[in-house]
Image 1 (tube, rainbow, N blue to C red):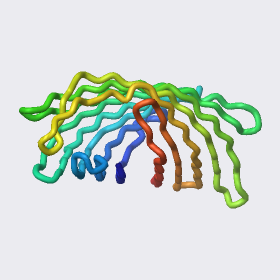
Image 2 (cartoon, rainbow, N blue to C red):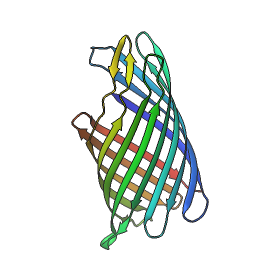
Image 3 (tube, rainbow, N blue to C red):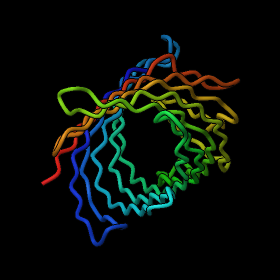
Image 4 (cartoon, helix red, strand yellow):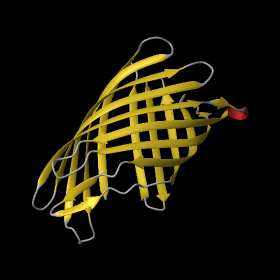
Length: 220
């Protein structure tokens, strides 16, 4: 499956520790069932809200609420779904010597997708625990650059749901446990902040060879 997504958002500082914001997004994915059940396309439009708390001791808490309108297109049918996601992540950054840092983190998320008359509602709980190790550099031109490495253990639990693809009906299988490893880089200078991350995910029932995430932030 090949997928692409774009997200744009804005936030505002409530005080020195709390920021509130919102975002809109769109994504597309092309699904290939290896010729056995034809091919399909999945399109998504999303809107969401988020709140980020961070203090001087290095603690942070990120909360996200998102609604998505999903459109699945197959050879002989098109189906629309409503999806809601809630996510909360907590972590603490520990500053080490020589501008090194380590950040353990944990996340809980809930996702639900409504079903049609011949399908079941999908309810999915996801838990993630990981750690990020980073090193900061300040360049002569004033840019602060921080390469990092991250590893996460992910598990999930879903109800017994069914979906339809063309005339076929499938049980939704859990991905169970998997491990995600990532290498990334952030860079900031005055009002600009850039980020780039590449990750792979592997498990007994789930494999994602390569995922690339790029982001840009401008602060007024």
